[in-house]
Length: 241
Image: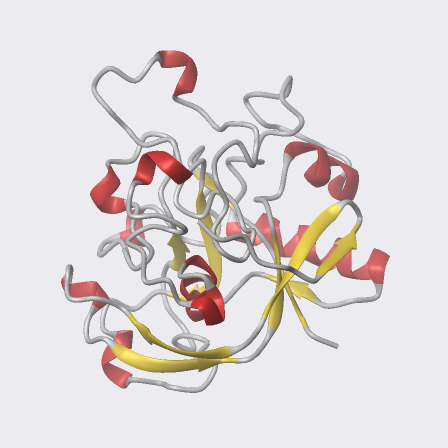
């Protein structure tokens, strides 16, 4: 993979990369919830290179209830969408900047390599083993939990772990049929709903459910804003000043 120059910003030890805006074909024909493929344009934004770690979470919130508290550089797991909003509010108070969760469109655009648009199946490769830990029948028990961030290869933008380690919250409400509206300019999802969008796979996901375009079709039992399942984490974005 060709490495590219990146423009970095650091906020409270959270390294972020500039994702230059562009237009891409969002979705795929693999699953019904990923259809129809439609053209979307997103503006430039900064995205955290890694998922938010236990250490970063604890610095901002003052607490850490991770099941793996002896691993401060592991991705922070088991945080609800509502708790993430509290984290963001405190981070923004401390920094005077506006950090937020990515929209679903921003997440997919970054996973695909942003304006480089590699169109790999996964974020940075067509081989999931290059960029993530994926489930296999012989997977050791020690690997079946959140891992230290950045252990695998990054994508073209220098972003790590978008298809593995933890599933990642997005800002949007979930609607299986939302793509049918074909909203083209910085789509932010439905105005209401039951569950929030989450993207990417986690440490024990089968590869077919870890692609850049995969959307769960039944998240209502799993991704209501108060859900704090141990496979859920997040990364953050910030608008360009």
